[in-house]
Length: 285
Image 1 (cartoon, rainbow, N blue to C red):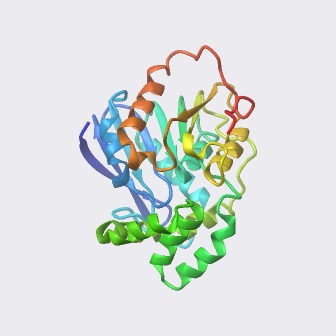
Image 2: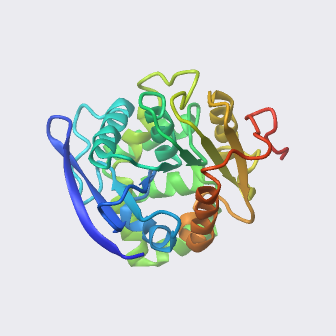
């Protein structure tokens, strides 16, 4: 599936978000919400490989070129409202998919408006990242984007020093990470601003939650996933494990992730034989 159009929508008082559309821009399909340290470009491989929906619309959230700035009033509530603007512009959306921070945004949106199908890959929730937030703020205030990238990858993602140094050695790739690091502190801090409701996605007809096998039951992504799963208030909820993958399956195995999403779409018209309510049937680590 090729990218066919890019749309731009004003949000808030003084910002805007762009949306990359793949496939038929006039046909309702899948809306994708990336998370922190990610943008619409990073989801190109997944969007291009998806075949179960006639269109895939990938949101480029605030703070990522060519979308607008976060603004001084940025918050998690602003993200949910931004997504509402996008969903209004794509009436009849068949499914909403969010990754990481984007997964939480999608689940919150599904608590405020009816949606037929919501999919979230390792959504995060407080107390995710709380221990590194002071150092992240200090690095941002110092304008040290290199330190922000390193904190995210070493202390949140848990990569070892050798892996981070290999990333740093790729000058073009490291510069891309620095660009994505700009909103990282504000987005993490937003988890501790607006209160997150105890029940999530209450207006969705169906919710599928995905965790990478490498993170299942492990801090920080697996434990955040468990907390989110506990809060999902939809009877028709299933938990899925993506074999051999961690948090960045969209970069390391985009085709495999796309096939998994296509598989979920294939059964959307029929209820599963056995509905698994999280967290009662959450796979043991």
